[in-house]
Length: 425
Image (cartoon, rainbow, N blue to C red; front, top):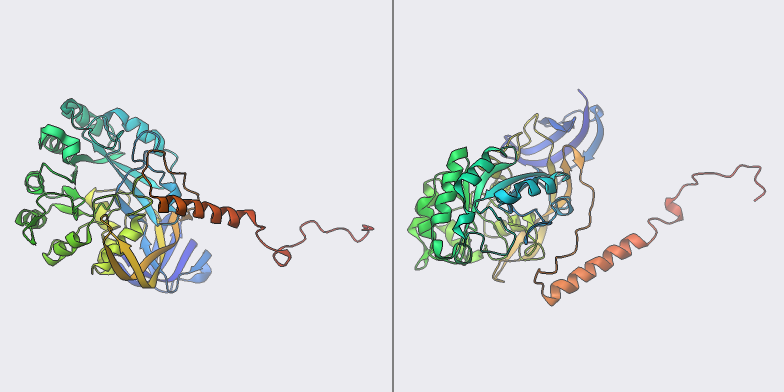
């Protein structure tokens, strides 16, 4: 048995594939060939010593926005995936029926896997908010037809339920999203935020397997009853509604998630809601978001499962996504679990300290390492603080200095075209 790649002796956390512990991971033909202790090194064309490293399936980010050419929020996934370990990106409603083909074209050249949730509003996220204020945009027949003809790309329906987005229409956009999802047997992902509507009204309509994102929001009205998590939240969680972090710019508060964990309302999935505004903070990326959940006491194995197999199963993604099952596409992430004191900040500038931090070392898609790629500059409409702008300038300067200096000195060179002995020079 021969392998193209062997990651040897790493600490594997692959809950979906049933591998948690020290294993070797072998790849052949872009797919997982074996996960077992002490696989033969001589059988592999390339062997990577992963001792002391953490090996996970490629991360599955359940809530992102990756349509930069046509939306307010979109970002390029490939320029972020290579240093974060995220190999499957779920675009959460950037495109409605009017723009689904544009989204398909935009992601056609992506190295990472991209799946989509269809926005119930046909206009999608071309603006910061308001896509459902005109109820005619939430056309059930059009959305259902779009879902039916794009099942290779669309795995759910997205609706934003906050005051700015739904205006005077209350719960009606959500009702329509649920109706469309029912036609295809897919879940609804519901964004919660500043009400109305209140959280309990939204949760009352959701079915088991539907997803409430920004579940630890500090902005959502009705999350608390006094100092305790509201009974409607606890009951929906117990009934099988899936709670997703969806960090974003304003969707994550440490005190809320801590109260939820105390009440037994643990997040089912951890996502970043990575987009053009939170890429520079406070979310930054999915490993940073995962580290924030470590900081509030979630076990490492749970955190990894919540960013790999659980989101993949929540959307019924094909091909073994989120696992290292034999035969699955060889999407892998290798991390260092750094130890120290790491300050982490939520969407409201409240801090916690973690004694561990996930730092990506290398990311593989179909068994091939993703190459480094510089991210594009922020769009002109993205609000940045002076400190963020200065940090971006400093990053640019450091990259320039790194690339403008000669790569090696004389000791690192060889004479590629030697002179002949007859050369008089």
